[in-house]
Length: 215
Image (cartoon, rainbow, N blue to C red):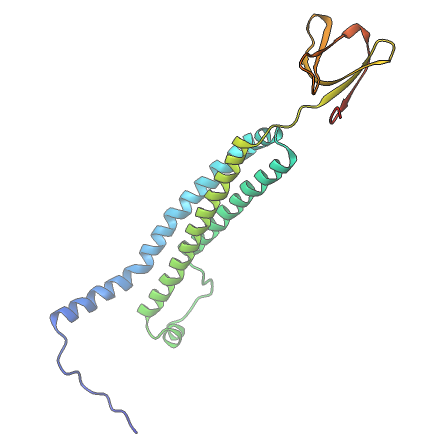
């Protein structure tokens, strides 16, 4: 059975022609619009990464230095992962703005693969829009990770103070606790389980050694 083309039942109306023209204009402007939006995201992401990276280099080590090891590891993973996601978002924004087809194509290639130049522009715009969507999602995840890492530094406990084991007198007297003060020639230690601090004359101290706990 041979299918023959049929003429439409009516000629295109003015509305149909206007819709066709608007669609053609939409296709024609789709790629420049997507790439202009990607350029804005690229510039914003580059400034964001520069600002956050500089803040981490200047303050990051000081902020995390007083955290316990487990909390410091969690903060490092969250903020480091956030930076990695931000860089990934920047890469996708760059690809959306500059295009992801490094090889040159000919008109014959376009006609063979897409059928028309308009279809090629539309396909390129869709790829760029997909890249831009990936960039936005990466930025959202990066901000979430960085906020979570920053929040951990607000709530994390500080490093437990190092306890001191002090031997004094003839070597038979010992006291263990954290240093409260050393004024007036006296060493005052806060001893776990004891309300009053232990007071040791500095002149009688024979040895001091740090310990992880007094237990």
